[in-house]
Image 1 (cartoon, rainbow, N blue to C red):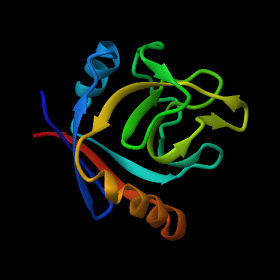
Image 2 (tube, rainbow, N blue to C red; image 1 turned 180 degrees about the horizontal axis):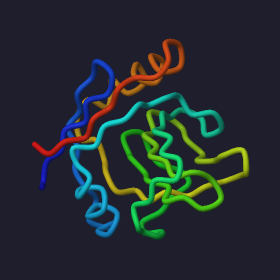
Image 3 (cartoon, rainbow, N blue to C red; image 1 turned 45 degrees about the vertical axis):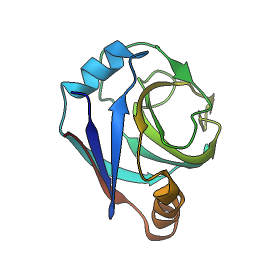
Length: 136
């Protein structure tokens, strides 16, 4: 599975898995197509996230960061906060009400990065949007 498609609200992006996070990629790939709702982050800056509650992917930390760049997708595997997926559209310092978090950078958008701020504003001002990750 070399190419991925991410459909978020009215936008479609191409993406790829990151080889530096093979366990996270395998765990996520096994659940594809993966669909949910994105909402604007509360604490982290310019990003949208999928709250996943107690959903477990069975992975620990790998290729983790607290500062994902625009277009990077990270999976927080749970622990001090709930499991979540975060997509950065601008400056992000990944955090929760309990403090700084680090998520596994496992996917990167490869097209449409110029539309990410518009997606962020859509979520901020108009609420939750559908998101779907699928193989191409």
